[in-house]
Image 1 (spheres, rainbow, N blue to C red):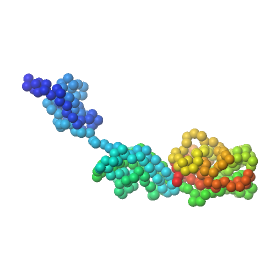
Image 2 (tube, rainbow, N blue to C red):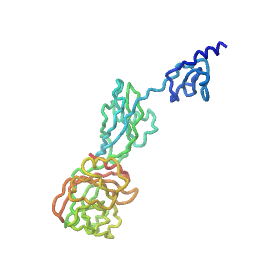
Image 3 (cartoon, helix red, strand yellow):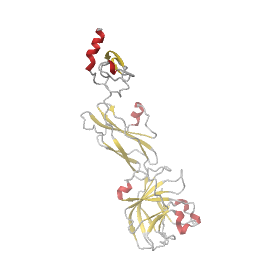
Image 4 (cartoon, rainbow, N blue to C red):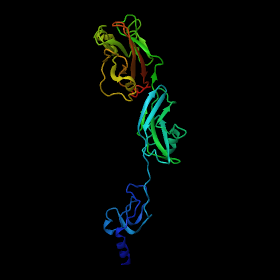
Length: 335
């Protein structure tokens, strides 16, 4: 009877400090306690299901869930030549007095299930990063990397990571390339995006077909000089000349200027065999999916800076960037 009286006195008592998400807490005993470490009001009527009624809750109060803090978010990359620029959105806890900064991790395969010891070897920074930008100047062209960022506070407490982002630096020509329109006699209008280098649209003496990923023509089927300029798949030259039938490229207009040059991912739609450059091609950015088909093709981009000459003798000057990993669309971002 004395035991029941004691329980009656405890009707309104609440044991604070427990959260039902505390799945790592020790199994408690007493009062109204759940197997996951949570405690509730000490009423006999409330102890149903997985709850257990006993004299008291031990440990008392139940273990407090870990005090997690907000991770950084929105990790993005800008690929350069042999470098990757990473940016992210700050942790919402960055103003806390014990907040130290960020750690950035890089590996050549996913780090989703990496252990603590493995993460130590993947960390790129020697001291905490105090901004939300990091330049990885040790990345190599044509190598695929996975990146993630965690917030750091106190001496060693880490947040959960940002979403993992994979990317690869890509080759960029040291000097702008010049392409002449197809009808400009004696000039090179075909572009090899890897080198980058301009080639004459010749299929014999010499045979340049395998070197040409796209060419500068016009919207006319025979590249008539009176028409506006266009970047085209090689298979369209001379109204679809059979000698070029295997050189099928795809192109898409990304937009203009630095904003288009820095787009991080390839579009999934909109690819065509020619892109009209219009009355003013300057500042337009065009993506190219080179000939060869799945598993062989590469992604490249062209940023037009100048157009000189009159119809029939027009020449564009452009920057060219190229992703060396086949069929890998992380090529658009650039500096």
